[in-house]
Image (cartoon, rainbow, N blue to C red; front, side, top):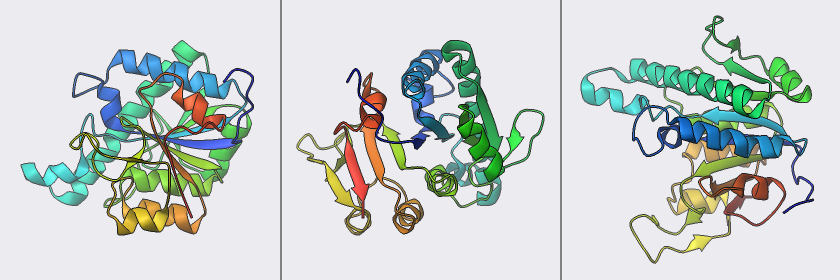
Length: 241
């Protein structure tokens, strides 16, 4: 892997909120923040422009609000606020541990803690070598952070969307429930949708398909995987047209 040139100029990395919880199951695990900051630093040092979208499931899942009597729209906004908390935590870690200038751009305005999302501003930050974290989802209820990742990837003309997961890629069935699940190295957007394989929601997949953004699904928990993917090694699964 040493000496390899990056295969992509600009990437959109989608991180799940659950990953931030680490083994705690809830909240933010400082050991994960340190780990992911150093993984991102390795990629940034290659000269790759890095944008990130984070979920908020480690703090609050929007669709679960209805279970406790909160209407869907309100609970979705609460979930969006959870992504801002994660974004600020990652920004702090990247600047403290990796020494990389980082900007948080939020789709929900909160100027005291984050810049408002403006596409041209985001692109300019990337061109200046800063890491950009997109927070607040799309700014609208009823849309997942996967859809936010697809939307932002299209807006900033990312070369690839990297979907970081806790499994090795796309499987024909849930590998955590079926020991005989088979890893699919390459699959089309339509086949993922038609077979009901859980990669990203249909809105996110459709947006990537229409904008011809390839998706690479890989295991973020294996050290060095992020750099391997960015340098073009066959890690995880590729979803494309």
